[in-house]
Image (cartoon, rainbow, N blue to C red):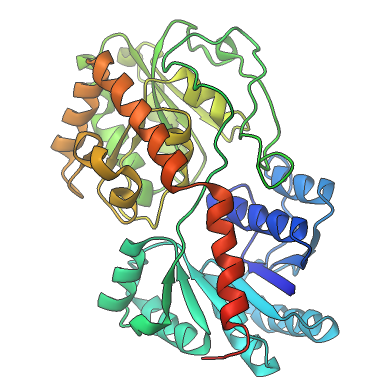
Length: 398
């Protein structure tokens, strides 16, 4: 098959990594595949994914869109690409790519599959989402929670929806015990060996904790994500001092960037915290930090199926998350011990304290997390579901 994957941009985010992994899988299966990004080529330090794609010799195109007023140019460029080398199937990722693809692909007679990866709370987008779904052959939802949201809130026809969860390549060998000290400069790759061939698209680096003033023996609570309101980073800032007061041996490490970075930096600089909050910004050694941590914290307000939870579970890392879309499907029987009711921040931080103070429970939960990921969320099995969907539905347009 000739398959085009259209995505809004190609920074090193969760959706972007999934798109890249799917492209690699399809190439290895003998399909002609290319990735088309609506935005410009990412620049350092956000270009790790495109460098990996180029190494894997996967064709990529950047349409250069940065602002809404560039939409006519983006549409024209996409239409030109599709006309010159018409695919058998077009799969889109993320909202803007869904909208532009829905505009262009059906008019050219190309079977179009869109992807919904988050329970979108912005109501102004809901009419557009219904229009996208009507134009698509199928709408691929990343979790049943997202599919339920689409039908209940966005009023999308349930017959248009199919659920294909995220997957992850399981790291080979036993997980490193949580909280173990990693030797200074240890080379632990960010991402496991991908069973579909090659490495997960992130550069391998070791971590140097001393360079960030995190003592090697420190007990680490880890946050990984965009520093935005959606991810609940404001809640960590609000309650972080109280949490650390109750856990005097722990440090809070925050990985990511976003519009709330100045607030987070000001929080970390409070003298009374005594250097126990560390905002590291964008990192390419997330897996190494997961291996060094005791808990992953995700106080997110809405999601689809958080990739960071999959990555943590694959490392045997316990987590504490809000019970948002996709979390119940990920955690299974360990849901109650690792999640709080959406918006119940008191329960959230009580779960953090309980797990931080009970190493036996952490070990049990972490092992259960890894076993569940191995059993239910193997990457190759999920990617094969895309291929099966297209083969069964590429000749019919909704």
